[in-house]
Image 1 (cartoon, rainbow, N blue to C red):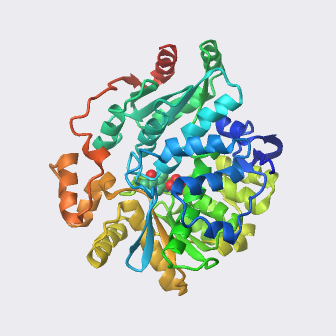
Image 2: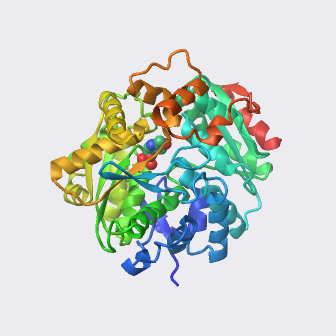
Length: 496
Ligand SMILES: *Cc1c(COP(=O)(O)O)cnc(C)c1O
């Protein structure tokens, strides 16, 4: 067996193990950790996935990258992550919707795709902490505008040797998102409303990470900070699994033969989900095109069509808020893999910080070989939810609708009729008011639970039990703090 090392996208000489990369999160030069090679997997190995469970498939992919974890460690991590918390035994089922296949990534505890990674990351981190002989407690800090906070809390609750504190903007998340967070159980969790907006919360967390005096105070409390955001390698690697799993499911159903190429369409924000598909392709999964779907914040559509990344543009708040992003941090990993030139990546990232743009048009042929891109604004997204429901009786959430439309656009513009798998990233119940609005109804005056019931009548889909159970759940976190008091709140939690 080989050893897989990791190094930074900005300075290729510093090599670390996968456990170190996961524990540390970001490389010391500000770059992202990437594996030294793409491990290869043969068609017959992929075909052998067909009768396996999701957990078994996961171990076969993870062990190719996490070579310093034992097979038993990986099995333990995977079964704790996906075993009892998902409401579908297939974990990430594929289902035919019209002429396309939909890969449902929202059967985890918070009904959104973030669970696929955030259920496993804490397990990988706890194990890494033990393997590295780390004695200190790891304190995870998260600033959230909604979904990530709950998924992180749910994943890290009761993780060994780790504590987590989540800051959300007071009044700046949906009532359902707030309820999901403030009812979170677990002896190692803390949730705090910041009297400010999301930028204030995020800035506060970033300042704490860069605060040397704070690090010293925490060291005296035997505590080290870490982060769970989507640039951590431990969040990317779990996402590679479901690309293989979806392919194996289509094989098992006889919809494709081993070796047939399939296309994937991915509703994209930070470029983490779709990048995992690129990894799968580089490992040998027969993938034709990866279609990058954006909402009105279409910085990635422009980039994949021109090679020029330009964040200097209007920012829109859309009905697919988890894709409202102008800086897609995981793109840095793709730039590295396409150039294998850390100096070049460093120059582009500096240009992005200093000028708000960079020109990577030299990469255009490679980008176009692997990707295709399209976007949909809110009007088009609502129309898509409505027409897909009329045609198929299937209800898409707002993010998945952006993708479904891009997938159809790709097919009609290119004539490529290879099987198309659309990644579905949220249950429609997570964005119930917007989905009801797409159906021509107003949710005004209805509380979150009334909306869910009305959506159930319209969609015929079962309300996820974990969302329904929030009605009457005990509020456990009522703390709030001023935006300049986050540092003190972290110290109070660290001392408790
Ligand atoms: C996070 C998220 C996305 C975007 O995924 P990226 O990995 O950031 O590209 C899309 N849809 C939903 C529902 C999400 O929560």
